[in-house]
Amino acid sequence: MTAIRSIPNLGPATEAAFARAGLHTAEEVRILGADATYARLLQAGERPHFIGYYVLVMGLQGRPWNDCKGAEKAALRQRFDALREAHVDTAAIALEAFMRDFGLIDRASMR
Image 1 (cartoon, rainbow, N blue to C red):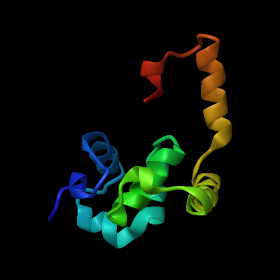
Image 2 (image 1 turned 120 degrees about the vertical axis):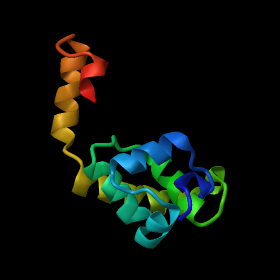
Image 3 (image 1 turned 180 degrees about the horizontal axis):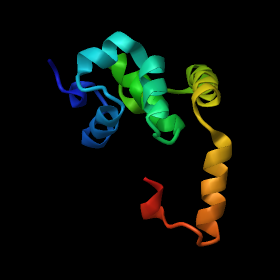
């Protein structure tokens, strides 16, 4: 079994997030693919971030993260938006932001 950080562009922080989502090896991530892996992250409570998504896609293709440009990046944005729509409670995120902005909760209580 290979560490997740062996996938290009992914490091210890990403590996920790994947572990919280129940993914522990690079093989699991490769079998699931980028979209299913990212969906697992979102379902585990990770906040959606487009750069994190396309970094994963590029890494699984063995490409540097900054190789994503133009029409390819636009297509990935559409896939990311669909994943976010399907797996993220945006109303809850907005409520948390409102509560944080008005000092009703602090950042430490959000995790």
